[in-house]
Length: 312
Image (tube, rainbow, N blue to C red):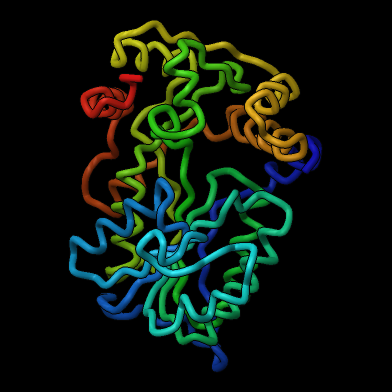
């Protein structure tokens, strides 16, 4: 996606509701509470692991899908190999869909359409899809899934930048090294704690009233990356400074860590698109779903420090 294309798409990008029409023209039903087996795709990832743990704590049978499959205590599920999807979905009632690497990548819309068809054929009743907030190409993938899954109830959860990217994700080494090199300029971002995301996903998977909803999840306040670096440094007990760089310069940094040229270029362009200020506003969707405020970034940093995230 070129910068001009992204800019033009963002001009018309609006929040939407996915209400599917059945064969007789009626809207997809709001079903009863889900207590049958739930497939969690990317079940060993940052979000999938948390969702699976919460479902299990509620007594909901969980099937964690991953490329490692049974070696990771779950079932085989690979977004690059459609042949295994039907088996992973067989006998399940709902699914949490977290597409890897990102819904904005080329081919994601096709994968979502294919998954929707397999999900509908399997008799799946409910899907909760993880998406990116303010990602025009991700919205295309959302629509592809919605159009293909028939009467399956669909809820879309669009997330702001994960706070945990600083503690267990791609930026952990940067925090440990004291320099947060990133192409965010001076834009502010309402960082979202993944625990809040997981709680919303589980509520949508197991409860009523979420079919067709699109939730845009953010933290309660927006911070620039410079402000975030200061808070991370205070919590970690070491200086952390933000070093803004251009998209191409960041792509070079990623290649230095072994990321392939095409993937590095895509990631740099994606971050530059997302972190240009259009996602800075906060929402109250976490509170709307859970009845409580979203976790503040300061609380996240203190908890992560307490749990030893930056002891390396």
